Amino acid sequence: MSDSNKPRISSARETMDTLMEMSNLLNTGLDTDTFATCVRLCESGVNPEALALVLKELRRESAAIKNDENTS
Image 1 (cartoon, rainbow, N blue to C red):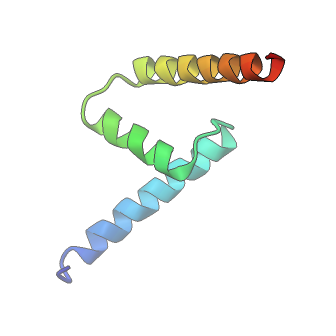
Image 2: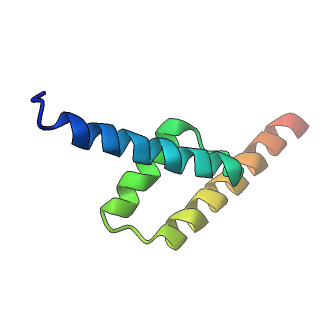
């Protein structure tokens, strides 16, 4: 990595750290890797509201499957 990229990388890391902190304060339940993936998807043009709905649905389905497994 060249020295000219270090400030930009440091700034990007600080931004991600701040966004992750906000995510934690909002109790999103997203781990760092999942959150980073969501940010990259949004940066690539995915609609954030649609992404949030998908995540909610996946959590709901996962909970239903776990519930079914526990009652079987």
